[in-house]
Length: 395
Image 1: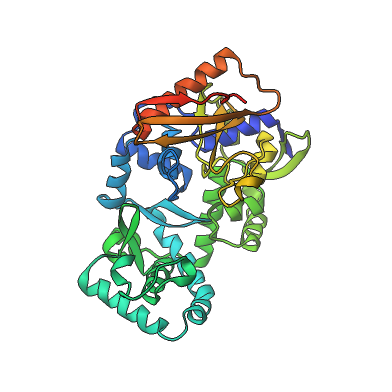
Image 2: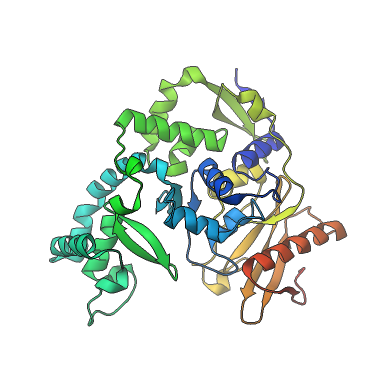
């Protein structure tokens, strides 16, 4: 018989698994930062910097002692982290690189012919030229390979050598050595990924087992579809087969949802009681990145938290419900609202435009005091001196 898990209990489990139940003021340090990213599995990277770039904000929301310099060191000096793809561009522990080789091979088989057709004649030659240039000349940026007469545009107008760079990166032959003004600097993977990880090999069954086991550990409880979607490196059929093959070590659990229904999921038998005893998260309010892993699976977010969230960057302004880039607010174990704001670095302010609280969440004096304290912390982290609240920001 499946073990029932109440909705509040399920939220606490997931928050603990996602690093949001840890004391946010506890010193993190470089070693602790690596441990946090390893426990999360990945941290998404995004170029938009309305307040702070996604990866920095994701990590800061878990520890206010997070330092950007520590992340740069782990990526560019220690090389214990690398950048590649999960469901999107992400920072990933280099120890996972042997498993990503399976993704590289699958990706290559999937995109090679399509990219050849897209680029037409010259793709294979650009592939060879670009690889050889990096092999003999060292790291390059995409702008270094653009012909002088080529007009820039979106991905559909990439220069053949830019396409070659991305293809070589997607298939693991190149890695990102560092970033300059957020532009990727590419180098051969064997010069970026530590030797023990670059040389590592795992067979197919071990790869699937690791991917599914690692995903379920980080989710706490999940369906086979959620397991497959976590890293997006195994197929739904592979995850489903893995669950079937490992039923002896999995427990069926009934997860309570915000609409009063239950959803059948799986959790590891070993350590289940510890999972069920997940602690209450800190009561403080935290501003989450729109790309925070807690809310990446939007359907899961709705089921567990009753919180509907979509990024409206690509929605025409007149049709937006909230705003261009609106930040979710987490208070304890509840997603209580969203806030529209921007760091104006020239003016030295965090400009707060509007707050929307969820139905039933009151703007009490205590809650607003906690929010303003968090905004002050975020302002300092973003390098601005003060917070400004626009007239009518409470709606």
